Image 1: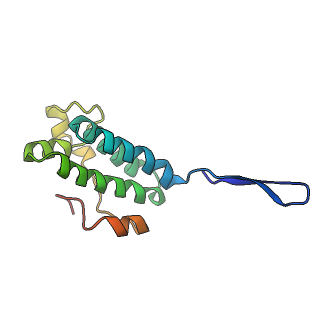
Image 2: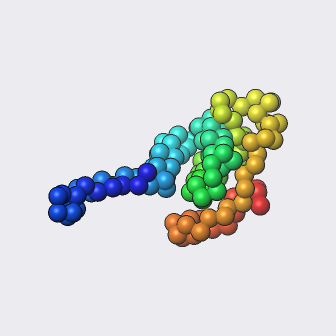
Image 3: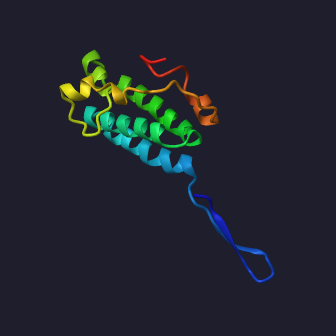
Length: 134
């Protein structure tokens, strides 16, 4: 996902190809989904499942921004869902987003690791661990 450049016959840079890096690739769409779908428990559950699944699957060097987004999702859920029962439902990963007894009892996806991110944006904007987890 790195950009490149095009050079002329003398080796001078004539074209810069600026591509998004991993953080851009994750942050833009996740932020938009979180903001525009944030008041939906189903969206929160599906987004949580996606982020946790990626954290489990991808190499550690890709996980920092995913943990940041997971922490921001927690904060959004606190803001949007004032009822404790709604917050509890939003805190459960569910790839289908529909809930149900099986999703509420599925501990395989409740593997939210504590934040381990030294990204400057994370350090500047996120204070403390995700709520309810250590």
